[in-house]
Length: 102
Image (tube, rainbow, N blue to C red; front, side, top):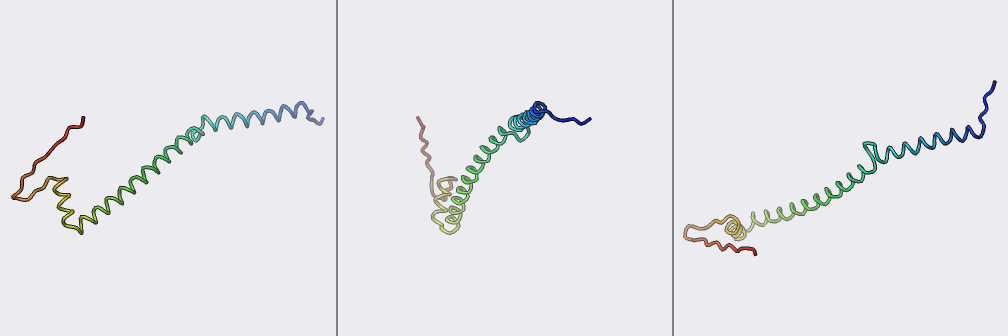
């Protein structure tokens, strides 16, 4: 006895695969480890990291140029030592003026 699929059974079978596909896509979109939500969060984190990378590369460029300047220019080295580290010569006095921010 040969089994033949009637159009109604084909429709049910087709619907079963269709529903399975929909459930699978929903599962992958929201519940899976690599879901769309997780991907969006990782993408935003990646963009933030790129901005930080750019910022730090610019800071490295500034610092390296400042280091080069300090290594070659003695008056600028003396200026930095006096302003930042409060160094002085033996015959000098330092007076600090601290302003309150109000």
